[in-house]
Image 1 (cartoon, rainbow, N blue to C red):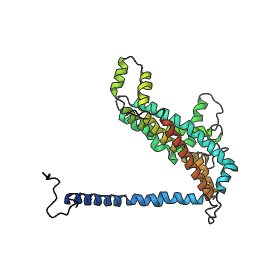
Image 2 (cartoon, rainbow, N blue to C red):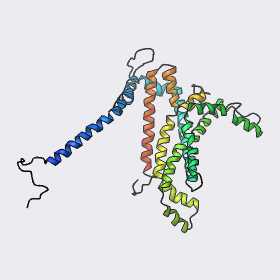
Image 3 (cartoon, one colour):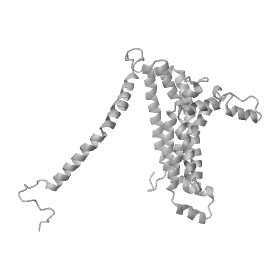
Length: 322
């Protein structure tokens, strides 16, 4: 007996789509059109504000374009000059790599430490979490960079304290090539709020029964941290590492304000992004600045790919995959 659910309506042609299915397909198509309509502003912004400028800058990277003259095609000359003739390019790469590979591990370690402390049950813990997140909201601002310059100046708070402790002639930290970059690294570490919040979310997902079982077996707090907590939150550590790595490569405000936009003293704070700004908007070599920007994109993509390739050796997921 033919099922009532599959019986064709009287007069319907063999193979014809049932009316109910046609209505559902029409509803789905209508919903799809509305979805694209609501996405239209974002798509327009993607094309006009992101993809379009990127393609234009890619074209300019093969020209001698400046803000004062038209662009002339010169092929790979900008890239050849970058790798063979430009000493400041190499200096900016060295400064940026030092900044990234020192500040990011220190920032993540400090953020994880604070997250572990704030993950405990205590009175007013929500207020403490908000307070510790505050540096990330303010750290990247121009105002904090200006304040940082004053704090580490010759008559800044740091030197006042050091003189009070008996150091008669402390250095002017931001004007000394040996210390200027380290003040910016310290500023980066101080902006630990964002990774701290992500670590807190990861710590909250660790099952409490694991700790209870380890405690019964006599494991110390350090053993529980290294044997239970760290392996379980490795995906969160990996996410934070990627985000902070990309952010550190793109750091600009702190170096611009503290160095006065020059990268000094002696190019010790010449971040790669600051050098792009100098070439494009101070020296008006916009074509060369575009080439620098695309090399930065390639550097970030390379280190991100390396991190993803290495993650399978240390990142552990709940399903057992890596």
